[in-house]
Image (cartoon, rainbow, N blue to C red; front, top):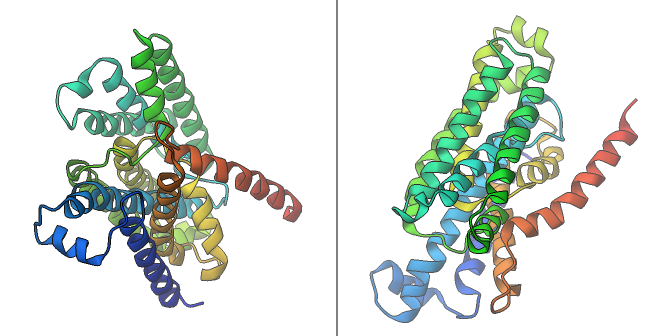
Length: 329
């Protein structure tokens, strides 16, 4: 399948999934309701679409695109199909920032305190990553530094949960860490949208370098690729694309691992050609997963999006590890 046909097919599937997400649910709506919502109507159906389902859908598309695109670039950069956006510690650091806002009560101060703290955590994680790895770090050193950042951010998050002043504060932190689009609003869409879009734009600028790197670092250098600049581009783009999503939706794992792996054979295993399809595939996966989670959730018993992606992603990861071992020489 050519890259254009794959992108077109994924875009059409995403439109179908978006229509299902908008019109399916406890309140079954129709395109007429969507027209009223977009024209500023004040009926109940229009309000449900405009204030609940549309921002939830758009936020899911943004978060999924960020995770899928970042996963594709990281797998090309590290030349490893097991790489995902969490490998450089961005997700854990953004989670720590958001948990800190919940723990210290900043999230109650103003509406955007939680996502701002999440983005600040992601930025701090990236700074710490480069501080640990140092200038001119190899891909292996960057992975090890990412593991260290992940471990420190995870330990600090666990400490804050351990010191939570009451069960309600602990439950608020735990539920946020599960990842969800339930409370999506237009404020969060407008906050996360520019961050994720900027991050994906930065990552797209690395497409030629990622292709060259697939031939090895020495070959990439001989082709004029500045590896230090490429590392900065990849990590910065990932921080924006993934950190912006984690800041507003919590931890949603395995999307950046699953989507690029499934689509890679359809682009003839070309790393650069995988980026845009992975963005669309990530958006499609999050849209469908959130719709499924919303439809099967019962009163007072919600199924969180991050839990659902982990339940499906963990077995896939194990299968991927086993298949990688079988083909290894």
